[in-house]
Image (cartoon, rainbow over all chains, first blue to last red; front, side):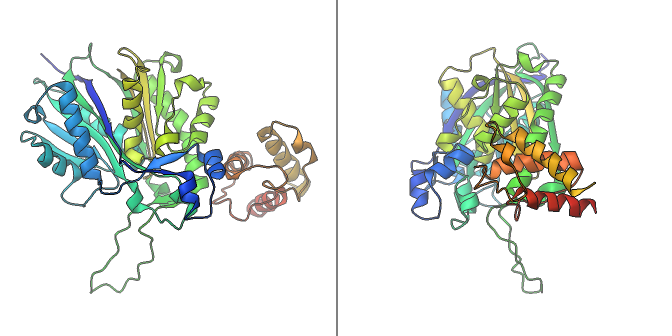
Length: 327
Length: 79
């Protein structure tokens, strides 16, 4: 049998226990619940205490194995999309592989920031092709709270921690989920959203490093990038899939800002009920946001087998991507 | 392009962004936040439309508080 596609066998998610409300943020910075909700749609976010990106992703991996009824030895690839790994090495995916004992799996991280999950799905689509059925864990996981300057109210209110993912299995094209995609990078705009700068501490350098290690964002440029490029990305992916926008049951957007999603939905004449939102609960969790929403919608039985979905990520890089899949 | 022409075009763009008719009273001194009750994301959208209309680059909304600030910015870029 020739495998040219994949199916989604299971979904799972894990978030830190600790919930931080807007009112709690207002106690440590000059902001308010009303201000945050009006501009972002965020009411609360999960913020790690003892959890790390790797422990959250390990929890997701174990849940995926359990839900699918397979063992860790049955996994061929572990891909973690993250911009907030525990270490630069080992990768989060390698830590997950070790933690779950997936001895047959090759593991690697990808960093495409908030587009990481859709970029990862594109990579997994290619890896799962072949003559043998293979399985991949694709997980988006972040502890963005470690990259936040908690004195900067313009960014500190936006982000949250969490992880979620899917178990993908090789499938033939008829039964496969993948229908089409569009992924694109705008490196010349990357300066508008930065985080995690690594300071040069070598004793032979005379450079004075002034770049912040925390999130720095030109909100206007990012907003503009998103509302201008998301419709194009969805239209191109739908064209690749030979579908129209009306064929798509649900649009699973990266949860960066509710106003961005509402703007795009209005622009593309998509009804609000086809653009589900959970940013109110989790904030912006970068690479974790699309799978967190996907898992929630599947567990709530809003998304059912056979539904056509557009998963769109956009953010740091700057990157953007849309995957059209039939669940 | 005269200052009046730029002002009138910007006034039309701001009117489009508003739904409630308050934009009829727009003057150069009109403040987006205190007079029109617009927040930063509303201003982002207005600035986007102005970039498209006048073919200018507006790097940041910092220092753009009033309609007149936008008029001056566009005139300076087009000079």
